[in-house]
Amino acid sequence: MNKCVVETTLQLLSNYPEWEERYAGYIKSLANKHPKRFRKPEGLSVYSSVSRHKGETYDLRFDGQSVGEISSTPDRVLLYPRENANEKYFGFILNKNRYDWRNSNEAKMFRKFFRDKAKEANDIKLKSPEHRVENKLLNEFAKRTKAEKKALTGIQPIKLNDCFFQLPTPIKASEHNPQYAKQFGGGIDILSRVKRLDRISRLCVMEVKDENLPSESQSDAMEQALTYATFIAKLLRSKSGQKWWDFFMNRESTSSQIPSHLEIDVVTIMPVGCTEEFVNEIIHVPSINTNFHCHSLYYDDKEFTKGKFVFSGTYPQLLMK
Figure 1 (spheres, rainbow, N blue to C red):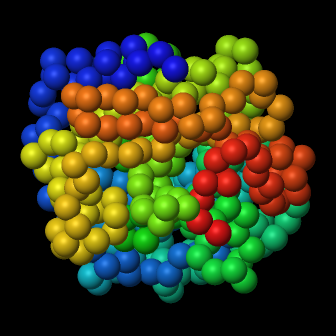
Figure 2: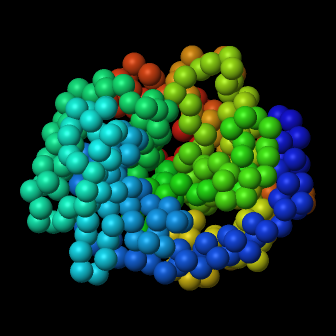
């Protein structure tokens, strides 16, 4: 695996050091936990972010498609539906307005519509098929009990206030040429904690693709994931690194120090059928004392259309059962 993308990313982060102070501010904000004042609606996923957390707002998504926003205050919880998208993709009409989440008939109708929609065979063409796969993966990885029939054990997505959370990065990497973009960089598809057979938890950066395309090969996807993983490693070596480590590891205090040597898994997730494969290809980066372990993970596209995941590749064999 070419280390060039790692070195390029490290150079960009060194050339534009403004990110370090900004991310120290982010984690300070995230440390102020806001109680979520509503239950997760059935059939929908709830997402938070650095910016949403400050204002106690939440993004509601159905199969990865944003369908509404919730704003929470100590006194009220309000729903703001995505009128145009909901009508376009689902034929659901509810004017763009604000509705009392708990008591209004409009919010009750909104919840019922998507609760019922989730029970249907779902072949709706949404804006982003890739976001649908990503959302399904997040829900699969977030399962906790054997009764839920989790397809891949030993993994949990990083969450914020029990909501799905996509960490922004200051690097734009989607065009396979890392560029510094301040607060407009790319977001990590899935950032998770994994527990491997050695029983030691580590971070895993995942890049999700819904197709195998020559224009967006697995090597390209891996370079994108490596760019974001390099930022994570550099973030953990920054002045706010210990606080980020505690957040990622879901710890309330600094009872566990950041390892002097970091081991980070970097994984591409694609439909089965790709001829390329990464099998624990290790990139050692002495300057940040980190090893990146590159892996491929595949899911069966036919089974996915039936609503379930069947994974293959060598990576699942490394995780705790």
